[in-house]
Image (cartoon, rainbow, N blue to C red; front, side, top):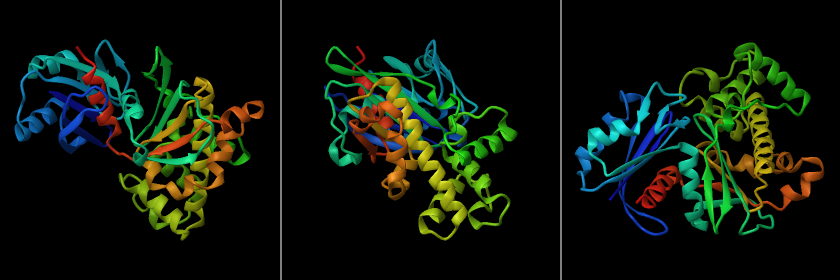
Length: 322
């Protein structure tokens, strides 16, 4: 039996799966508010108490942070997750930790067409590398390299690389964020908190109900909903800046991996702002890479609509454990 987990900054998903050669079958799944718990063991204990503890569990967990020596200090959560501790406490047969986007990447090749929304058809190479970029509580990336007939995900912390401004308005945004953070990384722009950062910049102190409680986890959704409804020009500009930056960063990452197989947009934000992503701004920024533009135009782009892809990917990985 497989226990899989997707451990995010806002929510944690745990699921029991039946192993399978291609796509494990989900038997049980439960969502938890991450910061309501002292650590991952407390969540696992509650989940197994409610759903039973099968024998011979192989477990894999995607965690939002770099995994070093089978342990991870999470980036946006005050937790340390240790595979050896989990194995000892719960007597699991095997336990593996993956970076959260690495885990999601294992789920990408097994997604059905109904779980994807196409933004650009392109001219895909079935044996080409793939890129995954996902904005949510933070910004994560993973490349999937085509090796020996299959896609192998590579862990990355690309969201913490430097944000590169392309326009005068983005340069003004970087100056605004530099005053706040000192160094501006991609996650300061492309994430839920990043969208709120941009909205603060575009409003320049102007009153807006969407920014009444900027510390609320719902603040990014308030900004995007207001922008899509067209009721606030400053929110609209914030979303426009966000979408164009998302396209540009996705294009940069696609070039880094020469991902002729396609680019996948994951995370919780993209499905919620789909009407904005379907506008030309995202694709134009994605393709605007000078002599490399034809290469970018040939890459398919899909938004992942399955919110449980990270959990599924962890289960796919666990299925491969011996």
